[in-house]
Amino acid sequence: MNWDYIVIGAGSAGCALAYELANSGQNATVLVVEAGGSDRSPFIRFPAGQIRAIGRHDWGYRSQPDSSRNGTTERWFRGRVLGGSSSINGTMYVRGSAEDFNRWAAQCGQAAGWSANEVMPIYRELESSDQPGPHRGRTGPLHVRTVRRPHAMTEAFIAATCACGYPFNEDYNGEVQEGVAYAQLSQRNGLRCSAADAFLKPLLGKKNIKLLLNATAHKITFSNSRAVGIAFLHNRKMRSETAREIVVCAGAIDSPKLLMMSGVGDSEELRRHNIDVVVDLPGVGRNLKEHPLLKLTYRTTIPTYNFTEGLLQKLGVAAEFLKHREGPISNLFEGAAFLKSSLSEPGPDIQLHFLPIGYLTTSDGTIEFAPYPSVTVILNKSYPKSSGRIRLAGNDPDDPPLIECRLLDDESDVETLVQGVEAIRRIMKTEPIAHLIDAEMAPGPDMESIPALRDYVRSHTEIAFHPAGTCRMGTGGDAVVGPNLRVHGTDHLWVADASIMPDLISGNTNAACMMIGAKLGRQLATAR
Image 1 (cartoon, rainbow, N blue to C red):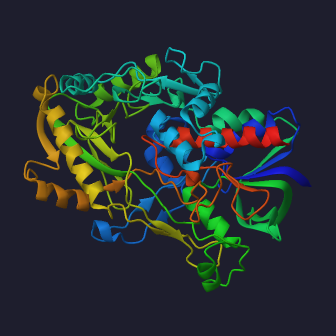
Image 2 (image 1 turned 90 degrees about the horizontal axis):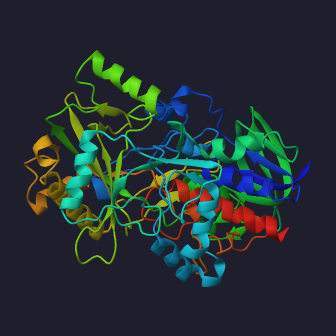
Image 3 (image 1 turned 60 degrees about the vertical axis):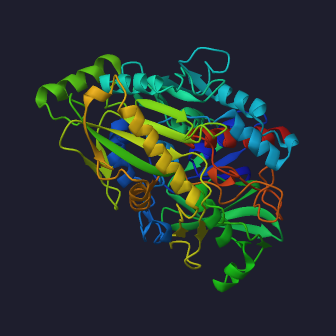
């Protein structure tokens, strides 16, 4: 069958894209191929099961040693399951600030439709939010809820942040992002609402759309520079399909890998791996961006969700979920803040997540919960200057790509994180949270001087699992896709996912990926 569209990847962007194409009224035929399997798992449905879901529904990627962090290597969790990473993430819902998209519009041409005034209506139409006001959607397929019954430590953190002079913001996905707030989550009735739940599953009864699971794309096929189909492994057998338009939505790691495997990339690199060059596009795989993340842990004087109080505490948590669909079964992220690391910053440049549970992440990605009552404050730098690269290990499609992450290559990223640590410490020493803190466990009291904090940042900073930028959108020589998301030098080949971001947004990237997919879906459906 010759399809109208083949969508590669049923993750955040791919599901939203398929939703727009199948509902366009054009009766277009859509084939969605997803490398992963079914999402029918309680570890996916219940957000607290994320710890186990990421180990069972993941590509298993590991980065190359990072010279900017003393040779660190780490797991790069990317969802290999229906719904992609939206099925294994923490369900945080963040659009990004208006300034982010206006910056994209300035880089990519104002006529391309990337300004805040043009993309925010797409967000609004996709969501069904419990937030009031004209900037939020009420009838969209993606359900978004706000934490309404927070832990006492979360309430104290928000109050202390405000006491330090930062504004309280009821809705950071509204008109203004800056401030501290209760977290917003892509959930319905306390259960995960993934991109597949919201956009793809309701379509599967339609005759014009088909989903193939366990279908791993190996190569895009071309006639000269025109993309005409794909070759893929489905249930251990090689297959091929053709389409009028091919859209790659495989994510910031696998989209550049697939392009390179198909002959689109740096010609010298491709020839080194004996891959025939279709288009010499040096930017493919470059500009890998990630939010550098640092955890601060504090031992508390009152019980938290570390379950130090025995069976009655656990029963209380279960009752809270059954009665109100709140608490740690539905989510561990309860507070969020978008703040300036210093007064000299023109706008918020750090993001905080507050969790009423203390934990650490080991190098193999295992979560270790503290054996004492504690909380965690996660610090991200919103706009890192450091960048890395995705490269091929060889010409075997089964070989994982080489993830060359230089997370702290630019010294300014270290300095921002140091300033962020100091800002968090001021908050945690301010009432009403100060008297609830027994001790700072990490970084700890020995890390007071700026040189000591710099060393700590370099040895303890992790990735936020927000990779982006490896098929950068733009018009320059290092851009991979144009502002319309068509791959430069090709016809009928598109990319829509976090890889097209020219730079990172302020916040978690899942919601932006859904917006990107929906935006391209509307564009393609209109042009048909």
